[in-house]
Structures are given as C-alpha cells and as structure tokens.
Image (cartoon, helix red, strand yellow):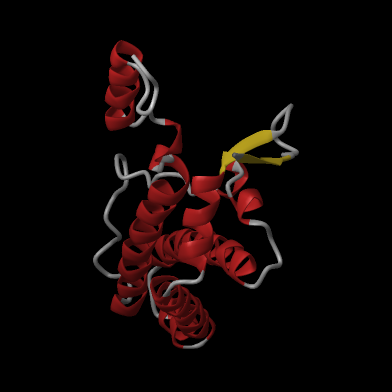
Length: 183
C-alpha cells in the first residue's frame, strides 16, 4: 500500500511506498539520528561562534587576497552547514510528528551531491580553524548525503517483488491441484 502525498513541485501527487515511510520513521526515531542531529547542531553553533569571534579577528590579520579567500571559504562553509541543518530539521520534524514521513520523501528535501571536481584547496595562509571547520562540515555532509540516498533514493521497498518460493508453490498447485483438492 502507498500513501499519497501532494507535492507543490510535482504536477501530480507523489506516491510514496509504505516501506519507504517506515524507513524514514524508523531512522528519525533512532539513536543514530539523535547523535547525528546533535553533532550537526553543535558544529553549526561552534562554527557560528568562531566566525563571529576569533574568526573575525583572524580575518583582519590577513592580506587582501587572503581575506577575499577567507570570505569565500566562510560563505561556502555556512552554506554547507545550512544544508546540513535543514536536512536534520526535516528529520526532527518527522520524529516529533510535525511532518509526515511521506512529506519528507519529497524531492525538494533531498541533498545534492557534493561537487568535488573543480574545487581548489583553500589557500595555505587561511586560519587553520576555518579550514578544520570546513573539513568537519564536508565529512558530516558526506555522511548525511549517504543517509539521504539510502533512505530516500536507493531504498526500494521489497514488497512489490514477487516471492520466488510462492511462485513455485503456485506452479505446483496449478500442475497437481491445490492441497486438499481431490484429483
């Protein structure tokens, strides 16, 4: 059975298999989600505190070109953290019953793959703390992207696949008559 979910992005209702809804609901209630949520929100808070405090002081000591690179890196970092936080908040909304698991299956809540090609490493004279926050954010994003794909994209519910053993029983019943049926 499937649950119908209207989607503003799609012209018709999205059909979400019950198996997928169960996977999403189970994950939202799991300890793994709790740990990932806590880690993500702590990283957001730590990074914000750094960028508002020590990072601001560090950036004032940089050359003009390095300060420009710092601004670019900090924007990339905050964008990545907002994507992480948004995904985690959707899962928490499912956990707390504020959002149906089927609604969380909509494509607009999926994480895009991280673009690796064309990325250049940050300049060597950037503050090490900024670089470390960036590395932590990318690692967390990769883990969450993996979870997102497993839960919402790759997971195909097995309920629609025929049972090969049942198929053999059906063939035997057809050939020799159903059990209990006189031949």
